Length: 504
Image (tube, rainbow, N blue to C red; front, side, top):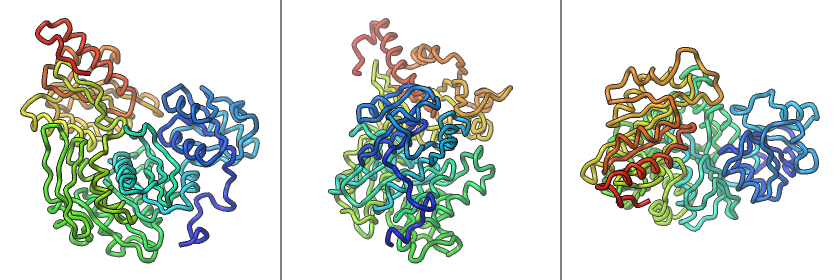
C-alpha cells in the first residue's frame, strides 16, 4: 500500500506539525507524542495541572511547559502554534487553551490523530486490548530491539530499562499502544494489530457492552490490505473477534488474515482461528518469573519471562508473534523477552525490607486485579510460603459501581486487603457511593481506610516476613508504595528480632 492509499486520520491536507502546543502534555500518551515530535525537530510547548517526572524530562529534551492552564500558554514558545493537541477524553472542551485556539483558528487535533500522522511512513505494529496492551507493547519494543531492529515506538508507560515511553527510530517499523478508551484507536491503520483481551470497560464513554465490542470490530477493519489481526485465544472476547473476522462476519481489507496465540487448550477450543503461537506449558520459578515452551510458526522455543504471572507469558508470546509477523528474527525476539525487566507501574518492585516485598501495579479493572494477585500468589507458592496483602484504590465511581461484585471477587484472592476511598479522576463524587460497596461483598479480611496518610502504618502493622504487598489502582495509590517500604522498615527497626533484615 502506498501513502496515498492509506486512510487519512485527519482529512484534507496534512496538518503542519512544526510548532505544536499540547494541553495535558504530562499524560502517559501525550508525553510520548511530545518526545516523538521533539525527536523529529518540532518546536513543542505544553501545559499540565501539576509538575511531574515526565514534564521535567520533556523540559530537558527541549519542550517549554507551563504549570496550569491559561490562554496565554499558547505563545509559550514565542509564537502561536501551528496546531494544538489534546486528549479529548481527559481535557474538558472549555479548557481556556482550547477555547483560545479555536477562537484564533488554530487546528485542534486529538493525540491519536497526531500519532497516526507520525506513523504514516512506517510499517505499524499496534497492540490493543482491554488489558495488557502497555506491557505487551513494551515487550514488543524490547524484543524487536534485541532482534536487531530500531523501531519507533509510543507506549502508555515508561520502560524500566530506557526510562522513556517513546522514541523515533531509524527503522521502518513503528510500534504503538492503541488505546480504545475513547475509540480514538480508529485513527490508526496498522499492518499487524494485536488484541490481547476484549471485555467490557469504559462504559462511561461507550454506554453499552455491545458498543464497546463493536469498536474493536471497527479497529479490525482499519488493518491495511494484506495485514494480520492477532488475537489471544485464552481470552473469550479476543478469540470471538478473531473468529468473526476469519469467518467473514467483519468487513476487513483485502488479504487480511487472522492468527491466534495462547495455550494448547485454548487453541483446541477455537479451531476457527489459525494458531500462530501455542504455549505448551508454563512453569513458575521461586524468583517469580516464568518459563514456557512455545511453538511459533512450527518452531519450538524456550521462552523466559522475568515478570510474574501467566498473563505476562501470554503477553510475551503476543509480542514475539507480532514481531515475527513484522519480519523480525524469532530467536532474537525471544532473547529480547529474556532481558525485559518491566514497565513502570506493572508489578514494579519498590523494595524488600524485613522480609516483606512491596510492589506497585496499575491494575484498575477486576480482570487486571485478578491477574496481578494470581501472579503474586504463584510467587509466594513457588518459594514455599507467605501471604499476599493488597492495598487497592478503586478508580472512577462509574467503574466501581458497575463492577463492585467483580472487584470483591478479585480481591478475595488476597489474604488481607486494605481498601482506600475511590479515586474519582474526571468524575464528580456520587452521593452515598464509596469503597464499601466492594468491601461489603468480600470474604477476605478487609479494612476500609479512607485516610490516605494512615495506610502505610496500617499495612506495616499487619505484615510479616515472607509477605508480598501490592498497591493497586490507576490513581494516587502509587505514591504509597515507597511510604509502605519506609513504614515497614521503621517497624522492623523497633523490633530487635527484625533489625538488619532490610535489603532495599
